[in-house]
Image 1 (cartoon, rainbow, N blue to C red):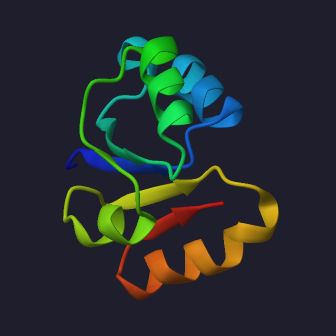
Image 2 (cartoon, rainbow, N blue to C red; image 1 turned 180 degrees about the vertical axis):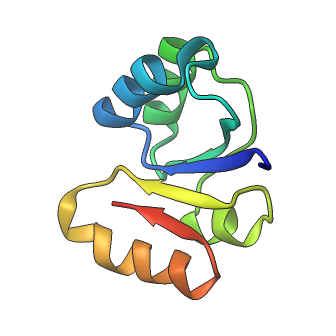
Length: 98
């Protein structure tokens, strides 16, 4: 089985929690967070500080989706934004967790 490259769209409280509890210290075999995205630079900086994430980061979900760095995305934005973000990722051939 190949490794799954995950992108997180939205780096607020929920994404920080998932990063620490689900992905921290290699807790999931064959999966890792390969890129993140947030339009709020302060939220992104806080995410990096809280989780130690030092990989690629984007300010546009479209740039993350188009990057080729991820196989799936986790949409961690306000709920009303989930449908358009999920649809954009699905249209690009990515798997989505929303």
